[in-house]
Image 1 (cartoon, helix red, strand yellow):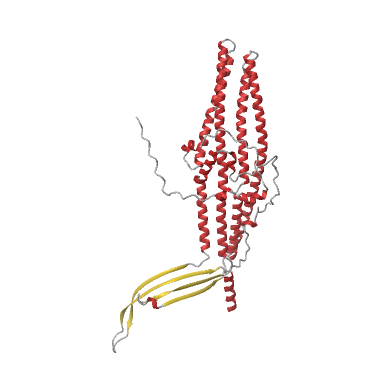
Image 2 (cartoon, helix red, strand yellow; image 1 turned 45 degrees about the horizontal axis):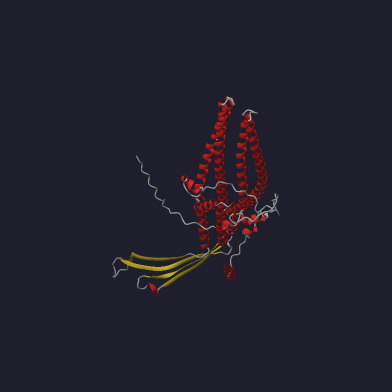
Length: 495
């Protein structure tokens, strides 16, 4: 018996010997998915090393300033930071459970009881007398479960991996927000460019309308030409209000992304007027780089490792538990004598599960099923990341071809308009060819702006799909005040 106790004590002192070998985050890579050596869609031509904060490659200072504000003030991101703080507190609590809790206690008791008094003489009846007793004590108490099977250690590691996964969740959200803000920003730039283009087209349509009316007054044009020119002017003007609405809606979106009320969108949006030309694509590297540069994949890896640690906890829960309890202190019937009497109690016990109706085995099966779920989730995360990179590469390549095609279409339409107007001015044709040529030109010009925006969006998608390291440099913001700021005073009406 002494040998068994000695062996148990040595096992406890030498550290936990878990009966289950749980995995670490670096052990799982892409889960059940085989990582390919290269991407299926290759980048043709020269490539460039993308800056750490990839949006700075577009050379837009207003976008850079807006992105800094979003990183600091976005409320979705602040929620993610708060969830990380919660996970850190849980991990600290799990780590603290490996240490024995020590409690201090103090008590003071005064009790009155009655004790029988023997008769003093023959024939007397026994009596009772009141006895008052005082009891004062101060002491310490500690209890500890020896982590022989590594249960507490596995719980602490699982909580640690959950905390790291929450940190990667913050980074994944920041990665998504960077792409969302960039797409909205350049959508605003394109909408403003389309507004300027429409205003120019309206001015040209108004000039043509005046020219046709002048020719009609000179008998050189008929009423049909006048109505056609007027119809073209009205049609062009009717396309302006939706563009103006889109500008304001995007400004509102950017304001909310930056943690501001929509009314402040105008102050946030800047005045950029031209879309960038993403000519040189970034280096894509190899697919295995996604395992370190995509925080959503890293989050899935750590959640899988945390789930496997909980399998170790469930397995260890099937084995006997070893507990030690110690209480010590000072006690006396008077305050003055309390320091003279020291008492203690040391207790050790073993609790071994004998029958639980299969509850512990069911818990092990449950935790193993969660591991399988997390394993499939990790593989899916990697497959989605691969798809996003491949989609962005092929979409940008094909969109670049479309942009070039639409540019050629605009050039041809401009020549057609010039030729049609010349023939109309010389009286060699009616106004209909001019009308058709102008409408085609206007449509091609707007298509070119939309195609250039799509090209920029595909480049943003590629940057997002490749991930990065800049998210790891982010720091948690200062806590928000619990009491909201006082509302701004209402403006007084002027009469």
